[in-house]
Image (tube, rainbow, N blue to C red; front, side, top):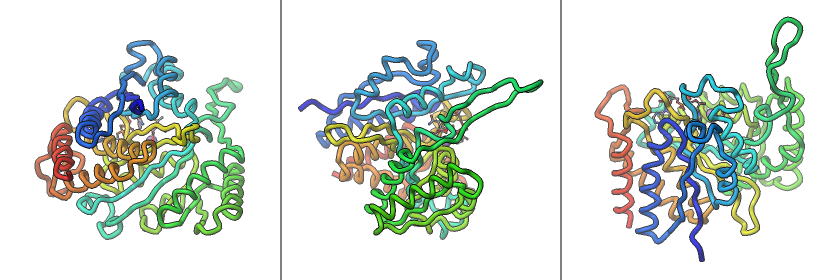
Length: 368
Ligand code: NAD
Ligand code: IPM
Ligand code: MN
């Protein structure tokens, strides 16, 4: 049988730096675990704009639709700030999500024991934290029409539209309930049904999906502003959080910091299953291109490495090998390996992006 294909879109800024470590890890699984992938590389974001004048070439879009999974680094950067909106690097990423129909974005926030002291919260609030944010990714205010900047009288108006259909809410709710069943069986749905009609519909549909098909899962509803507060007050009360595109973006950055650093958080963006049962999928760290540290060897590659672990689990049915990789990360952190973003108040000497890759590879070797 042919090897599964992985399309790597490293992107901009620290994207290529962290992806470099991931490719070494992919090679390790090929050599040591006989898990072979056909790896292809292409451009996205500013890198694609520089080469082709567009943040995502149609050929790249076609390759992404063909691939068994896509791994993306990060897009964006100050160099592209003044580009026309339609050409901005972020549009390339949003097109991938939309055209691959990756409606369910899983953003786990797990606090490794060794990092409990690095969280901005007290260690006892985050030690053992393991929550999963399920962010709707292909609709809502990111894509709703009308949108644009229009003339209105003697001034301009900026317009974006929050819009959700019942079926869009239904499918992301199902993915959250399915995940909850494999975890602690608890879902908290977040919206603002107190001020938004889309929030009222969201709450109704989530409740209906629950009552009809997932009555065994514990469901609660929370206004998203309260949700943000609860996430920093007592994050361990949550298991799975399901929420819309914009709230999910904000709440997942917030959850990231609970775990010690934005450089730790992976994500999986999943669509409907193909004929072979494998979902359309893209895996990417939650962080961006980090222009402030680009080119300095300071980027933490763990978010991107853990995104590959999610690919092993969700696209390739190798949960055991995903766990092996996650354990290797846990081990190096327990042994004190720290990139610059993981320096606590007491300081210390950080290791570089590549050195973090080295120690994780050594921990993988030791796991055999
Ligand atoms: P950012 O996530 O790039 O950076 C925020 C802060 O976190 C910075 O101080 C950065 O140095 C730090 N950080 C992020 N990742 C890190 C890592 N792996 N290791 C160590 N430190 C890390 O967010 P931003 O500065 O708001 O955005 C920069 C650019 O990235 C923008 O163009 C934005 O649109 C884009 N962006 C892209 C994605 C993506 O590609 N998925 C996500 C978020 C932001
Ligand atoms: C993320 C990013 C993206 C988003 C941007 C870069 C389009 O912030 O993946 O969290 O807003 O979804
Ligand atoms: Mn974001």
